[in-house]
Length: 176
Image 1 (cartoon, rainbow, N blue to C red):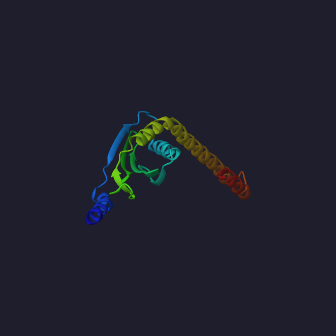
Image 2 (cartoon, one colour; image 1 turned 45 degrees about the horizontal axis):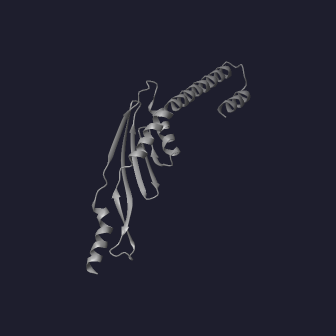
Image 3 (cartoon, one colour; image 1 turned 120 degrees about the vertical axis):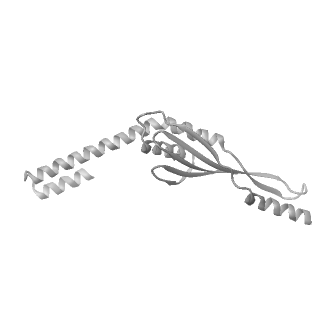
């Protein structure tokens, strides 16, 4: 009985004693038209399409996790317009028989490298990047067009060619 108690304590607390191993994957962005915003969009799309939950995303880093069956993984993705680094930690729960055949199953959490999941993120990001680049260009073009329209409208108002009422109405229409 004492041996079984010691065994169960060991099984329960061992995962807490072992630090999670970090696996790093890196790849270069070869498209000269890529911006960090386009890379950010492609990474987000590749993660969400594969079922990952994005916990945090800013201009140069994305943090996400995935829990599937008995496997958990967390990624910290640092990126720029030319390079992506993916740091991954993962664990998998393994079930084994207890001390006796009729006893309960014992679950042990062990470090796991979800290489296949990371390969999918890398391949999807590369595949989705051209669409993300176009999306960013379209947003920039739209923003430039919007700015030009507002500037032209302001000029017409300042020159006295349109009334303030028409100016405000047209401004609202442009901004919608």
